[in-house]
Length: 301
Picture (tube, one colour):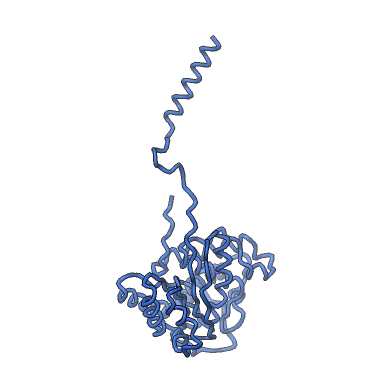
């Protein structure tokens, strides 16, 4: 009788197992962690609202196990238009030298106003020597809380950072539109997408809006994001911008990566892992929902 009962239970178990879904041959058994992308050789032609990015970007690439990420070079000019980088004398122009060698995969620029003739010039030179390379342009926020279309007008030592969400939404509108127009023209001329935009100004608006709405623990005022009136970034904004660059250059979410050293060195207890993750989420949400970034959003499951 005991043997008969055991047989009945065994048959019942086999029947239930047969009803459960099984992957077909060659079918994935579940979501797999995406493989790390190939490392890229990245050159920066930058002003001070971007020239801190290469080091923490390298930290993120290492944490994400991206092999052979390389800083191909950094050319720094304070408060510079991209055209000023282009016009540097040949013997001092590291950007031109790198592009002529064809040893750059991604060339990153940070103009002030758009359009900027220097962007067109660097794209043309770069593609002549490496037709497959990618060009990335940071759409920067502006000094003194003005629209960069008006730079350098509006310079002042006293800036009212206490903006409402409605004011923030309009803060950089004209320069963002001009950036998109130039990107459209360059990509149309190339016959494909070769130039992508880093939505730095837009992500800053999103972060400042959270602060204005008291939804950003760790930051109580919008002024805490800046070191001075000209709007040089404090560590949280530096981290946010680095996450944006990582997302646009590598097409991957920064969410879950460790905080860069620049944020840890601030030694602020409130800037903890939760705070860092919120910055990462803002960066990813902004980049992945911005068509000009080239970042593909992760589909809902």
